[in-house]
Image (cartoon, rainbow, N blue to C red):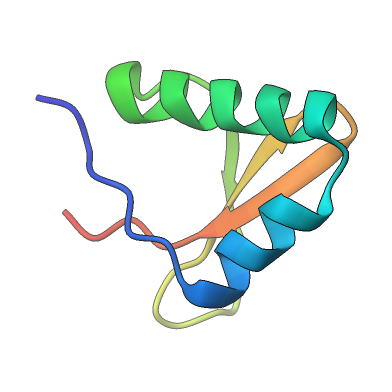
Length: 67
């Protein structure tokens, strides 16, 4: 079953501020992660609750995975 994304207002604003081709690549990477769990993710150490980082080319998306 696919995961569900919940966007903060700040995250929405940040994506809108990025150049469109870059934003689309980030959204594509997020979509793949949501559907398949695949992607260059890493759990950041020393942060509670856990924070994950997903790489999308030269960009990073930080999020929490609430299962």
